[in-house]
Image (cartoon, rainbow, N blue to C red; front, side, top):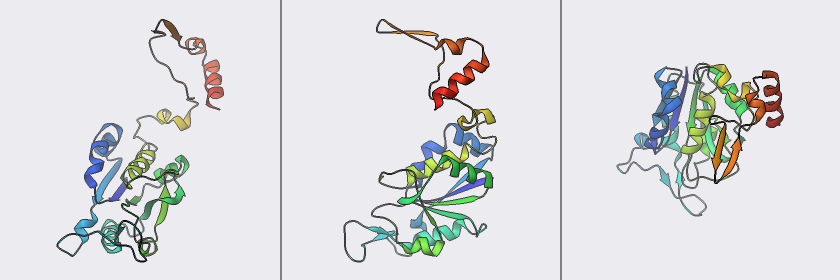
Length: 214
């Protein structure tokens, strides 16, 4: 079973998504597991501080190294070789191919969700973590990217989607899909399903989908 260990100061921000639909069913079926580690639980001061001012000056605050390292070590307690990913815009591009490789490994994956101006750079070195990004844009935190990573990996784990054919990657699904009714009338104009999809000729349908997918 693939287990996702999420290090985040906002663990509740994941709840609404992972408790719904396919991810929720995957957890219930024990295809995947999701565990949370709040760095605030690994602090020593009464204020449970997880950030501080950056050395060298500059705006904002930086997430402190020690609470994150302790949280990651707690996640690694039974899996000392678990891969650690730091979500950052400067990281390696997360792709569907990488998701597929991670899905096949059936291993524990630790994901650190950054906030503020970033995470103390010593975290990467100490944990031998890898920077990972979901795209060339900046978000307010790593929680949304973490959900993207979980979803992309989980859906490629056998049994999560029910059937292998449900994976778009395994069939020429194309960009255009249609369902009933055959003809829709909107603002006095007819919008029809392409005739080839109504033909019953599976070869023609497959060819059409492959062409539309290019």
